[in-house]
Amino acid sequence: MRRQHRDVNGVWMHWRESGWGLPVILVHGLPTSPALWRHVMPRIAGGRCLAWEMVGYGSSILQGSRRDISVAQQATYLLQWLEALRIDRAVLVGHDLGGGVVQIAAARQPEVCAGLVLVNSIGYDAWPGLAVKLCRWLGPLIQRVPNWIFRFAFRQFLRLAHTSRADALEAMAQYWPHYAVYGPGAFVQQACALDLRDTRHVIARLQRLNSPMRVVWGAKDRFLPVEYGFRFARDLDATFQYIFKGRHFTPEDNPQVVAEAVNDVLAQLRIGEYPQHEELQRRWVNNKVPASL
Image (tube, rainbow, N blue to C red):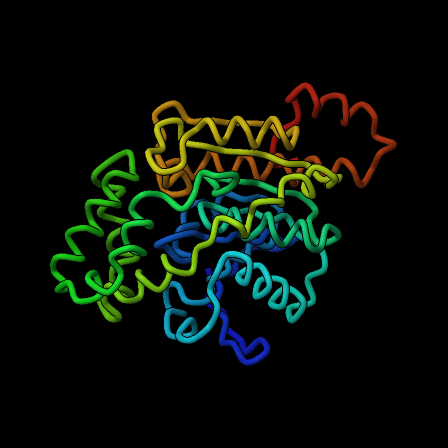
């Protein structure tokens, strides 16, 4: 995966890129970075994968200093970045906060959204969670916490959010270095920027999209309960895939399931380009066409 960066309207933006074909935009959540998609991207067939880094997260933490890094503003940054890259149509994939970002972006500019995949995504009244609320309430106190205490809490959070200790440790190695440099203050800033109102009216606008949609969820997610996944699938008339023993960080614990959902959307879009192929369309509906078609 190639690491890329460029200035977009005065904001230095970072992303990881691989593959070719129809753009697939992957957006991470809290407290991660584009590395969240490291096991998903190699499994996506026939798509140009671009894992975008939200402003104020990962290696872009400094870029978020004194800037609005709310979910709604992240959608603005994302659309500006897509415009700078001259990407006018893409499959939008989001996890956690990133799911909210792609929902808002799709609602604002429906023509950009060729397809939508939500993975353990924020929405409705499911967010922010208790841990984030505590950070907001106790922000000044948490910012004075020694790094070793914050590191312990960060590690425990990742352990609760992954299905195995090994996956949690791997994630720790990916994300902790950014917070080790900037301390708990970076996390507090991210938490304080979250506002439930950002996604309050998005669903009604997404229901008007004429794009294939998928919802993927870990059934044992302790932070965003699977009931919200069912609700997304119902309201968006989307195909729903839940992972019985899955937890919150599905792209890391179950990357193949996430990649298959993206590949299904790409396959449906390719078939849609050739509506005269009615037999292929019928076979796809019956789940007989491989994702690599």
